Length: 281
Length: 281
Figure: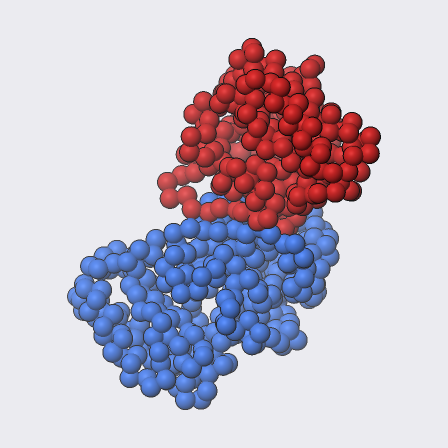
């Protein structure tokens, strides 16, 4: 497995790969890999001839006061994990390679980015779409892989790919969870032992939503109230949002119908965790 | 020469072209081709194996009250002209193919777009960078060709290509002029005979700027005053701007030094014409 830091080196290597007609699968990440990422790498490995993983903590998707500086980084560990799953190339550029002085171009998806996490983290998705557009142009993958855990991110990026006519196949893979249901996230590392125990309530609240809806409840308000009440039982939990929206466009729902996304963001101390489930009503 | 209207057909044809390892040259236009466009097609023909010209009057780069509806269109004539220069494929999509309902993604270059035409046409360059990013993704060209007449557009697009790591070579070719010096433009068609005669003053004013600067004048203010005074001699001319800026970043200059862009936009009735020259001081 090669580890590459420079755009020009990446182009050289991938130019040779493409000359051979090999199919390139790509998994963009911010590193500190966990089973969620690795499930994407495994899918890319199965469905392509050459697998690229990028590891880049993207400064422009973090707001002021967010955790850019603290975001966990461990390239050596990431390389071992990715290599063990059959990754062929790690692209791990320094910030100056991605955003040299005078950098000025941004990609923005409207509408889908104005709700849920987009409403609470201004500029976040603009940073995500910009860096991912750059990475797609650098890697020119045939297929790309994202996790359902970041449901809004996946939807926004898929919209960017469609709207900008990017020539690649977009895959969204299921959320991978710990034994107690907590969605895997690099940010789980921030949690104190007590917060970590309490955080299991997030998935329990999503399961409760599923149970209620399958039991016939159709009022979004009633389902959200039950979730909020469950989460409030965790002493350190502070709810950012609990929402039920249309899965296709993220618009709010009052009566539950069709493909619904039940999504939440909850803080434990300084750590903001997100999770969601998709339900067909 | 093929004429293609659908994205999917374009991909199919170009997929075959690329499988053969052919080098693709691309000239994006809004049609109503003139010698300026054709000089770009000729360059693309010389330097590539397969030449694509797009013809698309891009609604999102026109502001309210601008000439989107009136912009001249003549696809049949354009096809004959492009074919005569050895163009292999015309891509001429309907608006709904480029912007289907729910379209929401935009590419924006900051800073360079905030001066000259960008300051007078809010949203114009956002429309240009968005459609060109889409076209580049659809065509995946090896080399692209733009005219120096639209100096700011060329600079903005080149910046987008660099910033977003698009893998293509960007060429800016010299402005092509009528016998009296008027820069070729599809919009010249709008001019009345009298406006057309008067419009020759634009290039004369640029030549006067060059004469003054070569003669040792270094005050941007003095050069601009001489240009304005010359243009004011044309009765129907109404100046939008006359500026001298640094060619690399379009920032204003007081003392002329280095690579300078002398640029102007002037209205004749409802017709807004632009022109410029590059000077090394």
